[in-house]
Image 1 (tube, each protein chain N blue to C red):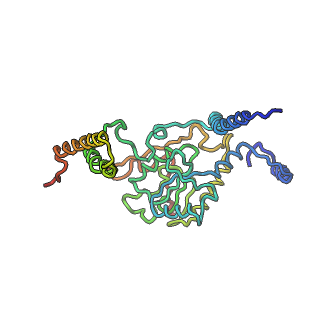
Image 2: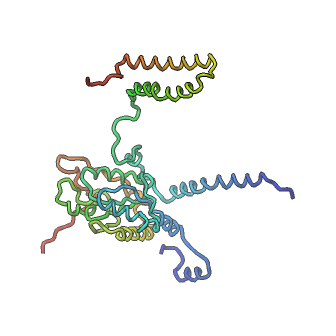
Image 3: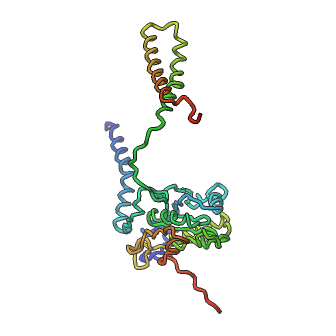
Length: 125
Length: 208
């Protein structure tokens, strides 16, 4: 008799399928024969904290923190790129140097823009 | 235990021979009573005792009730542990409504039973059984963890005795038995209505 290695996989897949399907089917049969369904407005409510939900979930968020995101990019993420740039500065070809300068210019443009919006000065002066 | 099953003597004899006989109802109730998942919420100092019951010293896991669920959809048991304020009562009734059947309620401590030492307070509900049906009451202020375990065992006994069929079958299996109870609203001075007439009758005072 030749061994059939794929037979085990078939058996394994069958067991793996029956393991979740059988309890679900039993629960379905149980509900059908014994337990009368009792749906209700609160039972079917989406929110389940005991507190009634107010308004709709489909609201638009105002992205008021985008300025902080820009400043974070300028002062934090840029530093991560600048450190390896400074370390490898002497051995860099001219193309890489220009690429980094373009990257820096893009972020400096963001800084100028944030400056122009006045978000670098304190609010209550 | 259940009707229609074999008699106890024959059953004991079979067990001695290594044959276990059971019925659908016993199997179902055995599974249910040993996997009661409580709803995870506490209202006041009784909740501390409930936490102690769930922790290692008292260990409610011995009774299969350690899985405190944060969602009412997955819970079987509501342990009302503490003072129910009138502000909190609608939320509790709503949570009870959102639990799937079969569901049980343990009213833990003097406050949940009657308002306890805060009964005279204008903002305290005089017992959670005014709005939802309670299965087991635990007296005490607060009850010790052993008392909660005792109530838990009482509830297990109740679950074990519930019937699946026949005229005296369990309430949650009856079609006409409601699964949701009306949620009280905030009135001018009190909750409106002050009690659910279907589940609560005020105790009668008799002068002798």
